[in-house]
Length: 118
Image (cartoon, rainbow, N blue to C red):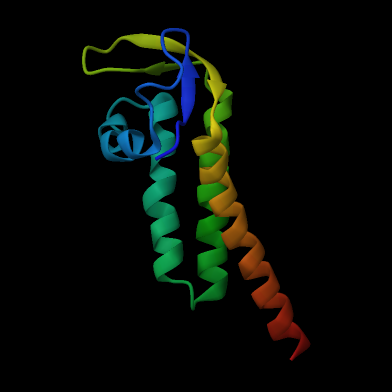
């Protein structure tokens, strides 16, 4: 529901988190910054395997690293015509996405520490 990033063409009217989530799967064929979409199925695996704490922790860290790698890209394809635009900023949706990974990582660390203390 939140805006994810800005380009030099548009800052917010098109790039809601839901639009990026739905269309992102097609980006894996394009490469580059679109590959960061793969953090979504990886974090889903982490949620599903939550009871397997160590495996879920590893997958959530992997999702976090892939998600953060988005900031290292300067340009992104913005439409089906292959138009490339410069990424000029990040919106609250991107930060919430990253925060969701961090929250799961912190939860796992707390869970592992409490297991060690018992």
